[in-house]
Amino acid sequence: MRKFVIASMAAAAFSLAACSEKAQDETSEAGAAMADDVEATGDAMAEGAADAADATADAAADAGNAVEGTVNAAGDAAAAAGDKIKAETEAAKANDAQ
Image 1 (cartoon, one colour):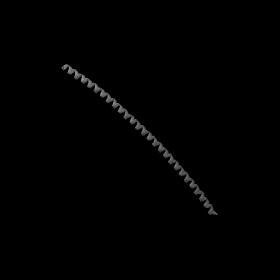
Image 2 (tube, one colour):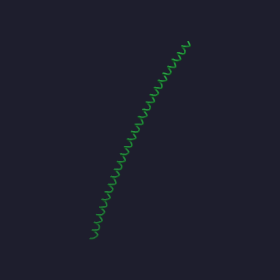
Image 3 (tube, rainbow, N blue to C red):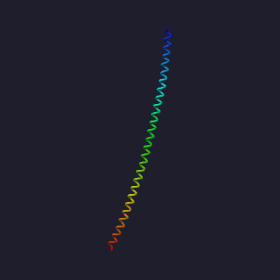
Image 4 (cartoon, rainbow, N blue to C red):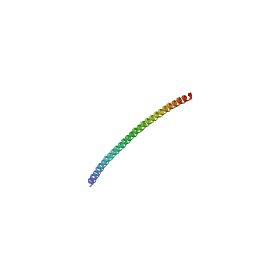
């Protein structure tokens, strides 16, 4: 009877060891899956940040072009106004000389 009890206890210990190994394997697999998910999330966030940076750079370039166009237009308008003032001044001088 005593041998039967010892054999039963040994069998139970081996069963628990096998279950424990299976549990460790499953825990390891779950941890690996979580690491993969975290990596994928990090990659997606990095890609989103890069896209946002590109869009910001493009918008800044467009704004710079718009400012340059406005400055050029203002310069052209000032030059045209200066030419008109000069022409009107010469016409006024000519009228005064008569």
